[in-house]
Image (cartoon, rainbow, N blue to C red; front, side, top):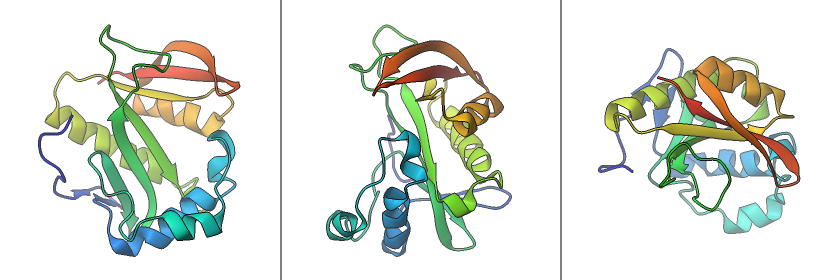
Length: 173
């Protein structure tokens, strides 16, 4: 999906979207241990397990951007291939880029996720023109549903997965 990685950091009005660094490890642990963050993701993970298993430089892979506010990680935005085995696709060969994001609860309600996701989508559109971007979230996740609409995603399908109704949309540039 990406010919070269990582890109230069993406700067927005308030954030820097960059590759993961060792200093982000504690924030990654906090993110995945947070019961609030895990609400629509099958739950949180045990902090002691995360402390043992999270690598020294977590999340260092193509498609993962750390959302940095004033030098500290507050969340992450990802672009990954939508698994062909999962429901929902906008092209016959599947494998569309799927937008994902997780932010620490203290960063919620300030527009950081919208700012970060919009910047990553803009970068992606310039890097891989014409490539569709999809998003999947539980319909019960009101915040994610509002953000999907704000970012310009339109509904393609709804289906049952992981014991809950899922909303599947495609980004309209």
